Every structure is written in C-alpha cells, then in structure tokens.
Picture (tube, rainbow, N blue to C red):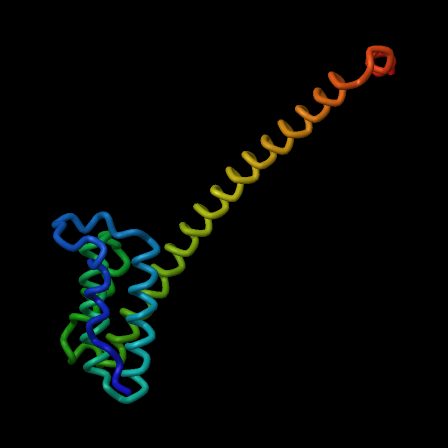
Length: 155
C-alpha cells in the first residue's frame, strides 16, 4: 500500500478560502505532523528516501507558513543543503527531528491548556457543589420546626 502524499493539504483544509493561515490550531498541526511522520516512515521503510524528503519538505513549508516555527525553519534550511553536504537520509532525519521537537512543544501547550480547562471545570464544579450543599442546608433549616431551628443555632 502506497502512503498518501497529499497530507500537507490537511493543514489548510479548515481555512479554505482564507488567506490567513494563522488560524491553524495546535491540534491541526499535531494531526498534520503525525500524518506526515506516519506516511514518511512508510516511504522511508520502502527505501523511497526522496519521496519521504519531498513529503517532509512540503510539511515543513506548510508548518512554517502556518506558525513560523523557527526550529522547523532552521531544519528546512539544513535539509535544503546540497547533497554534497548531507545525504538524503540525513536531510530526512533533520526534518523528522524538528517535527518531533515541534510535536513535543505543541503537546506541552495542549496539555497546559487541558490542565487549565480541567482546573476551571473543577473550580466551577466545586462552586456548584458548594452552592448545592449550602442551598440544601438552608432548605433544611427553613423546613425545620421553630424549636428545632432554635436548637440548631445553639449547637
């Protein structure tokens, strides 16, 4: 089975018709990078180093256009070095390492956002639970006979 080579187009699918690629989300970038790595690995394993390099270069160019990542930009410059300086396999690995580094950054960012959302949700949930128990306590006090309310106040 031959891997798909149109993976890079996924990067801008959500922004079709928009000239502003800055709306690409970290989740979309993660998806594109993982797809490129998966398909590039299949090409590389099939000894299609040129195809893998081509896919990784296209992906790198799209990532740079989408978020201007300096690590990917520097890796693309290194990968574009002439064959005299680096083999095709070396250029593939330069780009692959930059993708892995960017994935680490994006995943850390997404984890941080998830942690913050989780904390906000827990805070809201805690406030709702507290409010629920407070209302229940008030309800119990109000529905108690007057003598029992008086004894609760003395406790």
